Length: 107
Image (cartoon, rainbow, N blue to C red; front, side, top):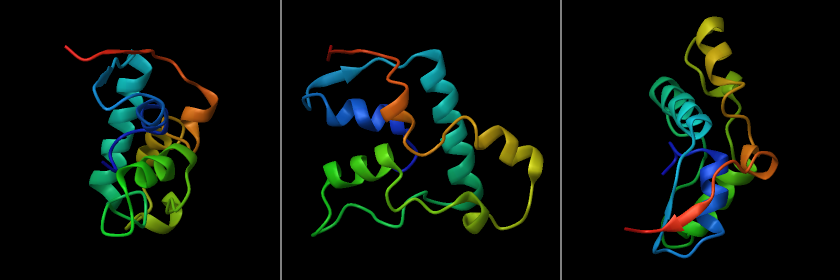
């Protein structure tokens, strides 16, 4: 779940569990940036679903940037070109600022 984006996490929080979330091209780019970050640094948040943390808690963490490890602290080495790809595409709180796609019923 930590490889989803803030915008998608926010939409998942705002929809019923049986609703399919349509991704826009921007969502796809943000998801790619999140996957690149995860592959390079590991999970973005310091928490995972468990006895005291629900899926909704984790989605809220992702949507708001709460418990997000800053890229400069998470990275293993400096790679300015890679950071330039990742940072603008998936900033903390993206979903609160740019809701780009609508939810549609699951098929």
